[in-house]
Length: 585
Image (cartoon, rainbow, N blue to C red):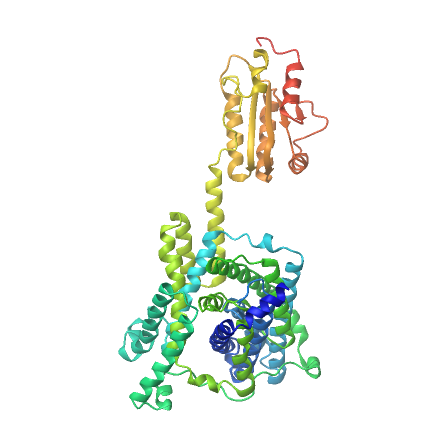
């Protein structure tokens, strides 16, 4: 009944209209992005086959979109080929073309298409298995500043994309003088002004018709302006106000069984490293994108279900000779801002894709560039507003610095490098902050110079407390805090006192785990205790910690000076019963 009710809601007139409009808008954006991705992969010696690349990209957009729309845990999820995996495919295609430059063109082309399809199949199977094995929670542990940096970096890339689409000039320092020339400024300026208007309207009004109504009004205003200024369509296209021209000729040609023997399979086997890189980047991109979507739409996403959905989508894309992809952050946000968070939005997105595959891309040549650029501006500015301006008041200084650094690296070097640097810095910041946490439980330790606080320790005879050092530990002890333990014990052993230290009890009852650096420092403590004729006792070791101490040869069966106790009481009882005490005790 729940499924029936959800589909009944999908076909309500209000939801159907918003889904249809959102599907067409995101579909056109997907086709345009697909064409740009095809141009990236089919460049150099492959440029003459760009038509086939466009077909591959548009088919992939349709296949990935419809499967994710139907299988996703979030209604209104939009999926498509993305920039980071596409960059890997471009490297893969270029490497194959380089090695096969002396082979027949048809063989080289079929091998490149097979490599793209193989990469999608491997990626799809990999992601699907991760989802089936319920590993979503394990791989979703991404530091919050990294997600913020990813969102901010995506925002600025969208702004750059808006400039590129409207005036065909990249937003760089070198191009800045050209961008300020009126003939070019008028193109991206119109898009930016419309984006600011759209941003203001959507912030002020929450009605589901605001976005589609504004888009339709803007397109009507554009053509009204052409009519009033007596500007022919051909002249408007020549001046750069309309999309296109797009390549003519046949587009999508999937591999057939008769073509399989022609493919250079041995060369594909040599590219396993690049395929593995594609799988890893697709996984990272999926995790970050879904984290960003969760924050943007304020809805929880089942990552295991998303892995399965994207896995199936990539398998379907690969079977048709298509390229890998996953959820699209900007388009999904756009759909939700258009109040079209329905599964039919992703289904309707395939209509422009199918139209392009059947009729060619010429109908897109009537879409105004400033409107498409304005959508990219709008999405980018919305992300920058949230993750650069508003984040400055929400995040600690170091976390905010990581966000800005990731933004810069993503836009100057690349997505993967920015994410990896962000993760590394977040881990470093965590280590620095955690190293300042006291691993010794306060007000519970006991040394000959410190009066006991624990009830069990209060009951000890003075003859025992004068020779006992009890150290209760807590948390996870690792390389950043292990030296704190060693320094504390070493200081106590070397301290001047009237009575010699005879027992050291290390209480691990509240310790969750240790690393190899801690094992090394405990080995040093063991040597210090042996050199000073001190008996070293371990209390409350869990199975994992005990196994590490045995492997590190700290716990030894035949060593009478190393003891293990189940709890504090048994350890204290043993110390009390141990006699004779040294003279002077």
